Image 1: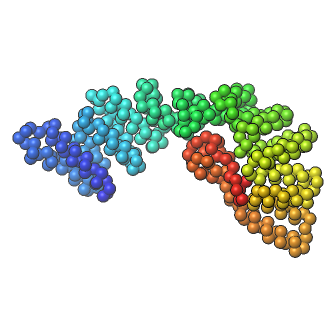
Image 2: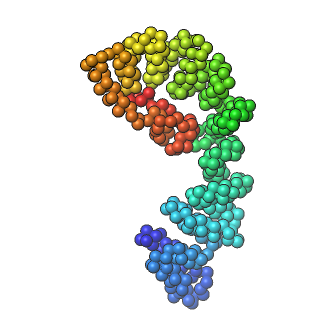
Length: 388
């Protein structure tokens, strides 16, 4: 109540002044400017905690003209920022509906009203207002990001592409790179309905907007593997790593499976040995250790990991080293290893695997669109002793 009182008293004073200025004669202006009946009524509502009625009274008193439009806009904006969206909507609706407003002032009111609707989750109403502003080429620097936000939240990727196409940047990201992500979303949707031709068409579009879109290559690889074309899949997986080496952990298992199916594991070993020095994490080391265990036994795999841990300390690497070492141990040595294994498991439990380079959001799942800041392709594997 106290906060709202301090908020509305300036409006009340202004309302009394404007009411007096517009309706009183010279003789009675001094006597009645503050103690007008509407002004007193508004104060009574306010002091009796009937804030909605007080707002209605003061807004009626505050004549809408070129001098007071900014006051209405600012008041509604303040209510929206305070989370009182219904009041913000009422103020901005009242303003936008007033006859005699200049076109520029009406557009200002529509922009604020659209943001009110958006804050209230009324996306269809907000979209309609923002579309009107966009069609009139008004407030584009504000309207386009707001429209794009709506379409992304609604997963309306076609309209998102259309709006982003009018923008040079989406935040700090190139609009073309972001549009490529929208095309990938459409490709994933088409793939989910088994419309592979449509999916490939969208991936072609993604490549046109952003030739180095690693996600588009990753989807192509998945489609090729689904169709049984392991050679095409492997080619695409290699391109994914060339475009974005941070996606290496995502493709390793699938690459291993394709090479195993084709009988080309030596090529996989060569790829891993070439990649390990270039990658900051432990994932390619662990994948190569798995292959060594299959071909030469678990003791050799443990020895290989032990040598690599000196170069890149890792709890995950230590945990895998213990797994391989347990196979050839017994007695007290095995008990000691089990103690270490329990410790490493506890250290890794619930540890995030990925983090956003923009806002720091973290989790165990790779999101192409960060749930925290809504930036695209900013979530990467976490490197470090307790991570990859």
